[in-house]
Length: 206
Image (cartoon, rainbow, N blue to C red):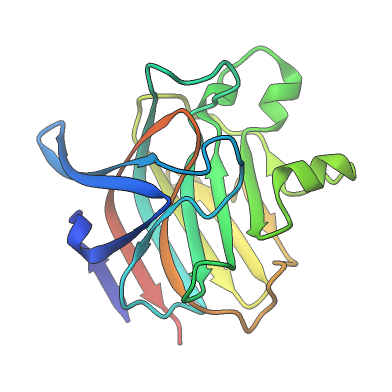
């Protein structure tokens, strides 16, 4: 089953974030900004779709990020999705990109172009503390441009594709909440980002 979600905040629940309907390039979008937990990272600062029960399938969305005027120096334009979000928003899987790392000349930052994390516990800070690098990869995207993200989710495996590229930018084979986790889908907001989303489509395999 394929479901197309309108860019309308009435379809969503805001969790430690604020979102509004917004016109961008004469198209309907959702604008989202992190509201609380400002100095806590890889948190449940999300915009979650109401009445959605997702297990396996394909999530597609177009997203664009800008830096807020008061963004800290370490802001990277973080923007992404969450999926298999439980009812009280205490567990989910997530993928996001860092657009300012996409085109930098710094090879270390380039390597941190995108990120999988699992809330709670398995954050970027946890992975880096233990030298785990397989949940990050380079990207070729930048700020203030639309990015097409496709996430293919099957049991414990997730593959993430950017801009209709044939090969995934990142594949995760051991999602931390396991193959039976299920829940809602939504958008991820992080510090310093003005995030825009549109054209959300969800294909449900089961």
